[in-house]
Image (tube, rainbow, N blue to C red; front, top):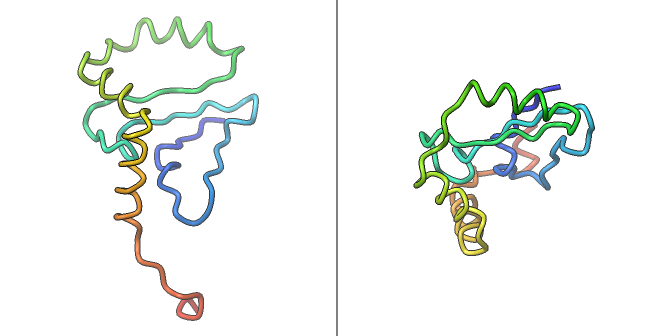
Length: 104
């Protein structure tokens, strides 16, 4: 199964639920949405261990390395300070919610 989890970190209605706990799932994610790096074309693939040799062979022929600024920004995205700022931005962008009575 291939799962796109690009919007996973922008879950507003409870905790995030990744499919990473299954052994036969390929998960695609990106820095575009949650990390506010749209256009940087930087992301990752989480895959089962058994698939890694074939994926490494495939990757050797399909991509160029991400730019040095993009790689440095990606590393900085995981610092405590940056993650705190991203959560603040996420909460600022939280869509308005209506009381359950209004959804009837």
